[in-house]
Length: 323
Ligand SMILES: [Mn+2]
Image (tube, rainbow, N blue to C red):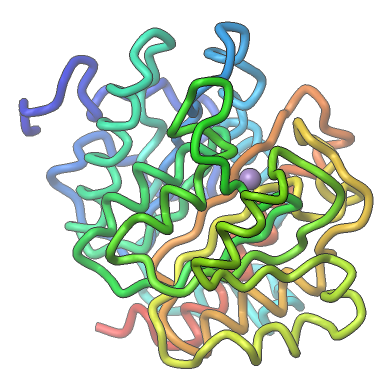
């Protein structure tokens, strides 16, 4: 294990009590593993108050793992959303890299360790599936993709997240797309499911439009359908998909900090995830902003697990992992 990391190093993970991603192997040495797909929990963000430094979202990766068997009963089961078993009988190596250790008083260090952990996952050649944490955590994740551009960024969210600074914080959950827009390797941006009112003021909406971001409101999505939205996203690109749980219909993802009526429904998410996988190359995906204490019968975690199944199942069938 490289000792270049600041303490605590990324090879020290939380004990993974709920490693029940179908008994996929647990990786504890990020410098020495081979995989096609890797789960990585980043259970924190960049808080706006001390109370948020260690909050409900810190347990979200565990919550998602805990309900994995409810999202997909087994690797031998026929999944009607993907038209067969998850891995299609192929020799696909899926691993769980556990969670990056968070230190409440070391936000910058948390971001650095997260970036380095994702860089190591990418070095292994694995497709990372990131479990947040709040919507700040894609910022270090995007940094780790520095040499993988140009990337077309697709965001599902109720909010545009274009604040430059919010509550004195520049790398927080309300700034994630603003920070992404400043990265050379991030190119086109599609923001889907926008509705209600969040942190954005008119100047943030204007900044997004000035950049050329494609702002797709939930009303527009519901009127034209996800296939029409998908058609606007250019074919053949490298994509990264960041899913803020509050962008999704709260009837299937109620456990969020900022619920808003409306939102992207399950079949639309399935169309989006599988559509992106098939029109180019999805380099990575995250699901963030899940607050487990507000969940109802695990449905938020189960929905997250379904998104993951759609990504993996369609990527397998699209030949992403052909040796
Ligand atoms: Mn967000």
